[in-house]
Image 1 (tube, rainbow, N blue to C red):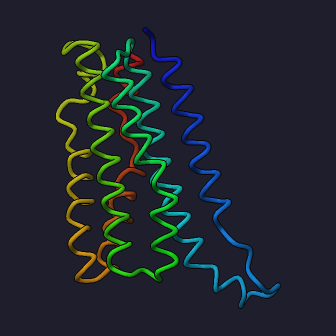
Image 2: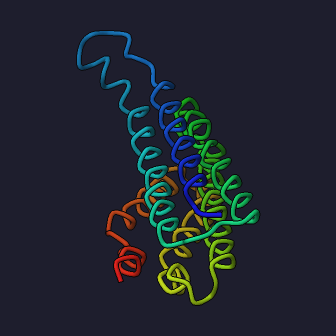
Length: 191
């Protein structure tokens, strides 16, 4: 089967995830800047999570445009990825409401790491379905950036118990590396 339905379903789930995150944000109690200042940590958590979900969505979009076919393994891998992405609103809300306590901050890292594993499983399933010589397989190559991101998430989990701010810095650093466009897939699709 082609990738159209998988992409459409995934787009819908990601849209719902982002909507849930913004609906979880409470309006400040007052009407002045001081009231807005008290909402800054919640907004920062929302922004970080929005960027992280967006990173997965953008790369998912590119990956599916390089693939021509999906199979059952791809569908289940995609569901695994979407499950963990759907946990991001819960995880970031826990971090916010605990005022950046160690366990919730580590839990956010676990959520991102499992989403990264889900993305990797989907990538492998699509390569297996489309072949080792497919555009997708050629574009992915060794996926150093993806592996480094997963390593960052995994390292941030125990570091949250040293200092949650170290883990937050790692989450921001990993997200920041994805702002540099990864053109491997785009170049293969155009070729």
